[in-house]
Image (cartoon, rainbow, N blue to C red; front, top):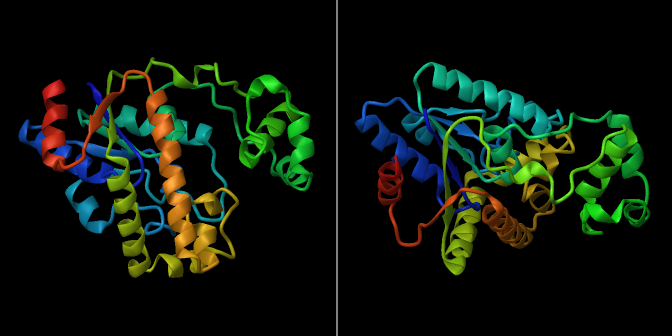
Length: 286
C-alpha cells in the first residue's frame, strides 16, 4: 500500500489537506489515519502552541503520535523513528492508509525511511557541553561538518556524538535518501510567501486568543530542554508576541529550505486553492 505524506511550512494548511484527502479516500472505500511527524506536537501539554490537530479535526481524521511524550522528558528523532515505523507498519497490516503529516523535515524522513539516526546521549555529557563556551566548541569541530557557528543545537549534538565515539552526519550523508520503507507519495505544499506570512500572523493571533501563553506558563517549570525549543515558547514566556511572529516566519523559511531538499517530492502550490482541490490532485496521482 502506498503511503501519503504531506509536508510544508507552518501555516500552509497541512492538516486541512490531510482531512480533505482522508474524505476523498473514504469515498474510495478506504480507512485512512494520520500519523503526525512533528518534533514538538509529540509533547503533552502544548497542543495550542504547536498547532496540533484539535478535537474537531481529530474527530474528522484519527491522528496518531500527538501528545504522547511527557513534557518533562527529552526525545530524539531516533526514538521517534522506531515509534513511527511501528505505527505505519501496523496500519498497513490492518489495511488502513497512513497519511504522514508534518512540518519537521527530519521527523518526516525518520518516519518514512531507514535513516542512520544516532541514539540519545547521556544527559550529563550534554549538560557539561552546554556549560562551555559556544565559540570554543565550534572551533574544535571538523570543518567538513559545515555547521554554522551560531547553530547551538548542532554544535552541541556534534560534540555529543564525538564524545561517544560516533561521527556526526555531514551534509552529504544519506539524510536525503530517496529510498522509503514503503512506496510513498510525498506532497510538498508551498504558498505565495507574503500570503503564507499573513496566515502565520493570523494563526499566532488565534493561538494567543485560544490561550497559548497560559499553556506555556503552565508547563514552563517542568518542560524539558527539547520541549522548550518549540517556536514561540520562550517568546510567550517573555510576553513578546511580535518576537514569536518573527521566529515563526524564520522557521517557515527553514522548512521551505528542507522542502526543496526532499527527493521525489511533488511540489504543490496551494495559493488560492481549497484543501479539497489539492486532495483531488493527490488522489489523481494514484
